[in-house]
Image (cartoon, rainbow, N blue to C red):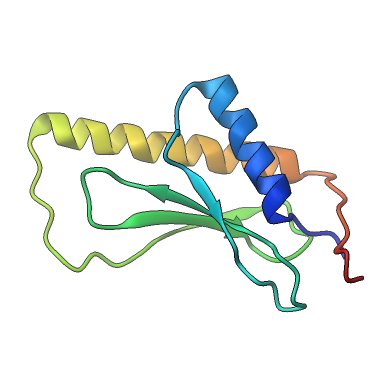
Length: 114
């Protein structure tokens, strides 16, 4: 069944970083799929908040991705420069999500366990 391995996602994130010149803190972490496959989870840390943004495909084989912003444990107080920085980080996250969706269209990769 088509999926995106951690290795594939790391390459896509690296390609995005090289092309965009942004997102150097973005990383891919291990996320075990329901079939035991390593599907990867893209994590975008936010410098001016106590949360991160997570990205993953809606489901195995789907080209669409979803973004999850975890609940924030504390109130965030920012000045205008910090808020602009956060807006820029969120913009990069949105661009990366669109990039991952574009790379996912027609992508065929099968689990080594299949």
